[in-house]
Length: 211
Image (cartoon, rainbow, N blue to C red; front, side, top):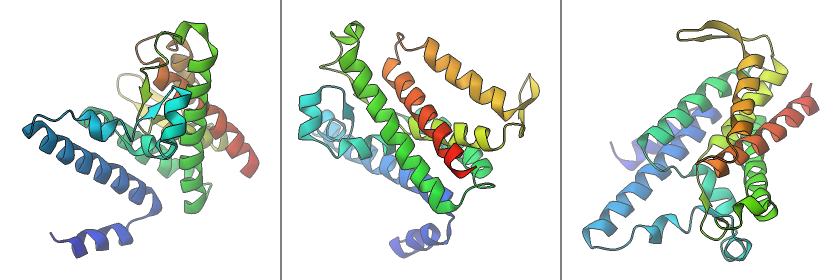
């Protein structure tokens, strides 16, 4: 497969699939670059640290692009796998009520809201004073949660079949996701949970604006 084949697949895809292609493409490129650095005994942080979102405000001022790049960056295969599966599922549901352009806007705005909630929380709450200078955020989950909450707001009774549980309404799945994130804000993935909450708030009001 050459570059023209890849470009053709990208252009033929829906906006939802293009978002997934971009995330996967960034993941592969970053991993290949990191592999090359490892072979020459160079710290891989030279790649990721410039793309991750820092909670430290002075570092953020020096790399403002990370507000965008962080939401396309993933730590490992399982991280991107679950985010892209969720993006695909919830994105398809959301597209039943909003346009493809609106979905892209929702993804970006959800990621920005997640970034804002993360940075604000780490600089506001004394609990994170020790971690604020060394904490970084990466992943599409804030944007994905925004899409999930929007879909649940627009179609609360949409049936979702879960393994071992059976069929549940989308609204209850969305409420469960947000509740888990709220309970996890002092855990090991506190930054990610704050991003989820920020994305959820944005997703709700975004859907309300189009109802």
